[in-house]
Length: 108
Picture 1: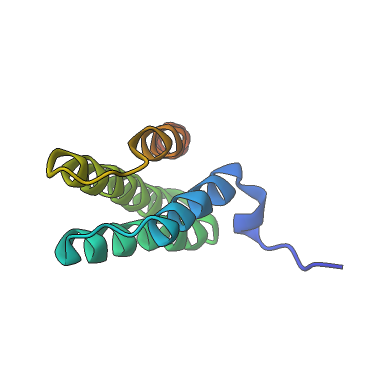
Picture 2: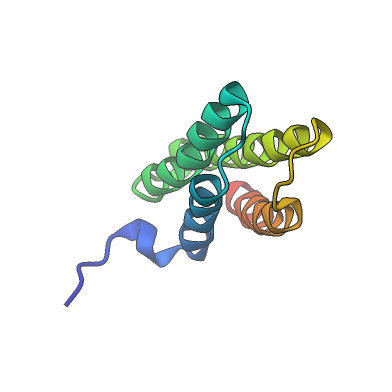
């Protein structure tokens, strides 16, 4: 039997993990963007987990940080595309949109 923790009850946690998987499977060529995209994607997941363990304003603050990091991850892939890289932008946008939408509801 798997142990379930508070963040496992949030669907957004699982979807955010897909964003990390994309950043890992499709590393950007530009070293600075690659590092930033990976760090931002990881930040999304970790802030969701931390926020799930808190209450009230503290919880919302972590979800806001996670939302901003999701936007940053998407922006890194958009910039890489603008710089001529072949990246899975549609997939990043789809997953990023889902994460941002869910986190927007959590911070209300």
